[in-house]
Image (tube, rainbow, N blue to C red; front, top):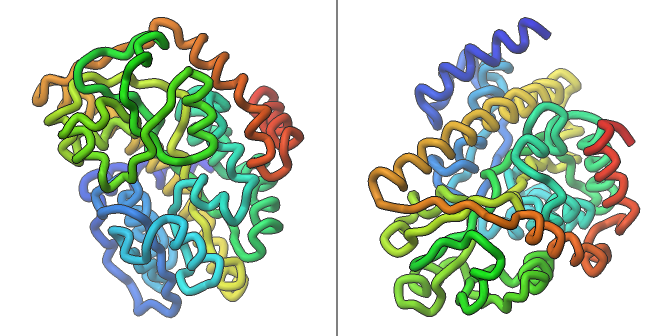
Length: 344
């Protein structure tokens, strides 16, 4: 264990010196697996994918190659999940609610206020880290999807609330705002619990909708404002912890079982190492993004004065969401028990 963490510390120093660089191969690959995700290589999802590829190359001495397919070239996240299920793509790093179409038990991860911060998901003992909870989740996902196995998990932090003209620091500030949100039943129920009817605008149309005043608010991870130029119009950000962007790394189960036990262990070990490295990357990246938005773009960060009101109302919507979660209330209660006790 001591050697593992010494190795992780060394890898962290090397990896953060140049994310996305491919480790020099020490041998010709004898196994190649494709890994698809939604985003550019420099995006948080791309950082995970390329770090994982580097760890696999290092741990296999170059004998296993992870071919990363950046930028959504394999389609939407839902399409990628389906391709991994079919085996036309062997692996993917996909937001959990977009895999939940195939394995509804994953919807437990996106219940509003089930988690109170990134540590609940990617910290030591977190729901997305290797351990008893993810083992149980994995068994449910395999049973529900037929061909999907979870080997890793990561986040792009939690969604923040953005506004053009004012701080959102209390639930009363939502009144009268024109808020864009995805057409998603979990999120719709959450917003309705706060007394808001949202505008279900497609993501690709969101920048134009904000720029032209069709909407004046939306939510997403904070780095979106910096990386996609929203800081031209968004001047107020309220970082909250109501809903995470929780992603899972899935592999096609038949493709995984076709690997030797030794190669399977390399994949699992590499994913575990990447989970740890990536959680640290997200933490550091969040601090850099906040500093850049504040100092370079004049963005103001706001703080909720009544977070308990938001949480109480959103949790009050859970009963209408149980039918969307594989295993229903029982699985939700098991998850809460695990969070509180570290066991089932």
